[in-house]
Image 1 (cartoon, rainbow, N blue to C red):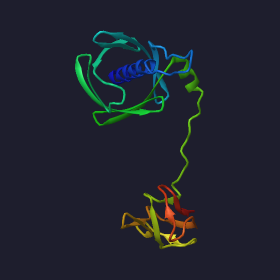
Image 2 (cartoon, one colour; image 1 turned 180 degrees about the vertical axis):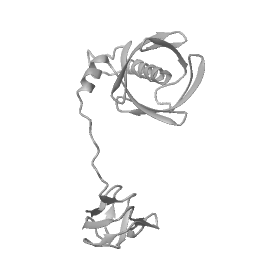
Image 3 (cartoon, rainbow, N blue to C red; image 1 turned 135 degrees about the vertical axis):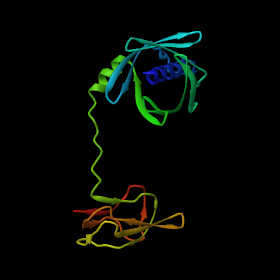
Length: 201
């Protein structure tokens, strides 16, 4: 829960900075936020934030946390004290929230107003497409050669294609047995990352 308290404090510092930006649309001023929702994996955690002389008093699900830090908007590292314990986290903005890395664990979370959290509940889950039947280019480069054609049987470890990137030739091999259904690129094609090269049955 301390990480959630840090995220809420970072968000309040960001909003406070936005309040000081000049040239904003007339009539619009970001308001200080004392009631927030920290959203992790579609789970909402009600958070209350109060600015105090030493930093922030953050209530996460009714439990108080004291957050003290000299973090500023744009810093990639949070180095502070939470509940008397030093915490160091990597911080990267991500949409309406942050990606925080602490102790080798990565946590993606959003910091929203209660109203925005209600709308977030209505958002459908976007399922990534199944790309398991495709050979994708792992990097941008030039497709030098294809070792198979549609209809060919392939075996685990068999060479499928060669992609040249930064003057190095990379051999792409089959991860499992299968049959080639179609070729989506020809030798001499400039490939982008994750561009389809082959399709399997």
